[in-house]
Length: 153
Image (tube, rainbow, N blue to C red; front, side, top):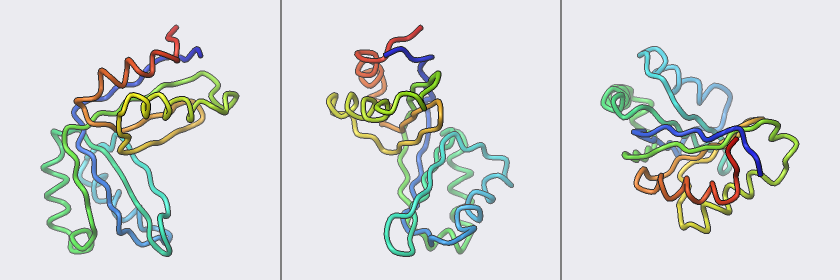
C-alpha cells in the first residue's frame, strides 16, 4: 500500500495520566500548565476509560521532561493524579495521502507492529496520519515491520 511517508520523532518522554476526571475542561487544565511554560507537546491523546474517568497521554521532547516533572510536583491538583512516566520513547507514524479512503490502514499498522512483537504505548490518528509511541529501542524494528506493507514514494 502506497503512503506519503514515515514520521519519526525520537527522544520523547511519554506521560500517561490514568486518573483524570472525565468532565469538560479536565484535559485543558493540565495541558494549559505546559503551554504556559512554553513546553511543546509532540503527542497528545485523551479518552474516557471508565465511568467518570479519562486517560490523558502526552509526549514531550526529553530535554523538557525535567520542566514537566517540576510542573507536576508544584501543582497540587496534578500531584494527586496517577501519572506513568516512560522515558526513552519514540513516535513513529505513516502519513497519507487520503487515509480516509483506506479503512483498513489502522488495522494494518497495528497488525504489523503486533506481529513484530512491538508494544504500542500510545496510538493516535487523523485524517491523514497514524502515529504511535513505542520504546525507542524498538524503532528500527518497527520501521522495518511497517515497510513490509507500506510503500514509500
